Image (cartoon, rainbow, N blue to C red; front, top):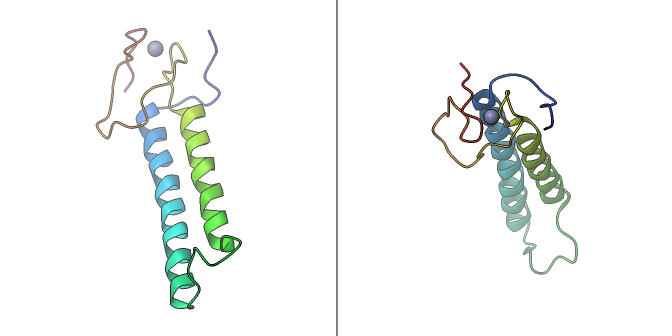
Length: 98
Ligand SMILES: [Zn+2]
């Protein structure tokens, strides 16, 4: 049974994860829009625009952050990142948190 690396409220960590993912989506989206307005279609470019690659790196970082931090503080089991509703108990060990 692994100890969670970051203590704290998994609901708060999930919100932080959402913030990172939202920022990543915005970077990808804005980069794509800027690229499109510049007259270069994404399909024509041999390489993805730098901003899109940065945004994808941010998205991967957000997924990793969520995987590491959205865990039960009692048993360390990963909790669902997908649910928007806060959880206050663990479906695996039944532990509760504030
Ligand atoms: Zn648990």
